[in-house]
Length: 110
Image 1 (spheres, rainbow, N blue to C red):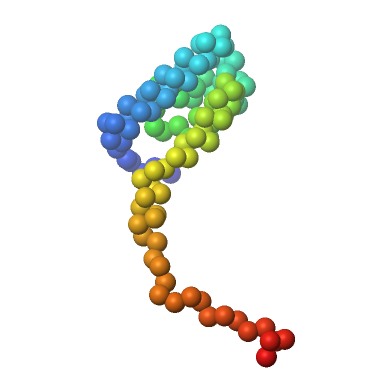
Image 2 (tube, rainbow, N blue to C red):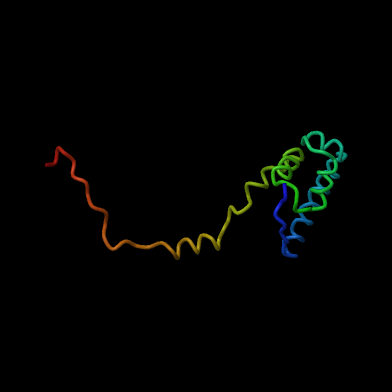
């Protein structure tokens, strides 16, 4: 099966590389070998190597699994949690209706 080819912007490539480096440093601080983390995460050592290099072809699920093994999975819930720009855009597009919705009359009020 042919996969679609894509090119990441240099800024995104740098972000992924920093994420991979942070994951590697977290593993080393915990004094865990690559083999230990890969085994606990249920991935191969080469996949872990790709994660630690920040390669974009690795599934987000694998990144999450490695973060879980390192005890850092709670950091994922903070992604896009404080979306200031998105909230401003959402607020700017809220339309105020000119009329209130029609009131439904209950049978006992007739």
